[in-house]
Length: 167
Image (cartoon, rainbow, N blue to C red; front, side):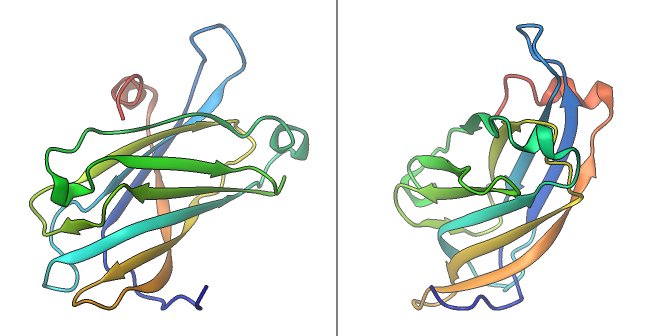
């Protein structure tokens, strides 16, 4: 893998909040990630082969040692150019960090007219206020890895209803 550039081409909005589990289990953290909203930073359509989110544990290490990824979901996309189907693959081998590899079945073309959303639920030990992102994108035909950090917005309790059951 190459060293990522420091400029992300796609727009990322990440919102998080704590919510009780439906089965009366412990509280967990929900992230809602929206990719491709608004203007395209490059000024031209961006092809995407996928991206990776990396979130560090910053709270009680006992919480971080528990199961990290409770569930993930991706919104439905309307066209083949939107990636056909998106996959969220968690990597929980490092107890201090959880990594989510998010890949479309086919390269997606972001042109500012659509976006895709993901819901990720994980244990509350991962309470970082930023997420490291590495995207594999291209403006012309050459794909390269670009990296950066995205700040997580905090959702209020009333906003969590929008996360529940929605990708």
